[in-house]
Length: 72
Image (cartoon, rainbow, N blue to C red; front, side, top):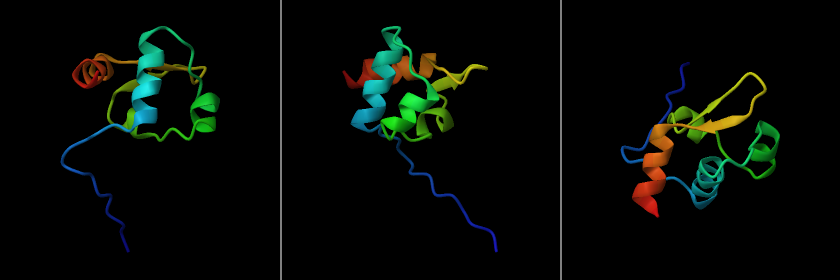
């Protein structure tokens, strides 16, 4: 039996996700550990708003910056 993954037609980031994107834009270091500690979902990675380097640190993408500009 195959399980389908539902994706809402419109993506609205949570307050925590927006806060993390803003931290990344300001140059703060956000590691996978700190993101997990803050209960941040993988939706940012899935939606292409952030990327991870070899050390598993997150970096904001241009799409992530666009979300911040649209929201704030």
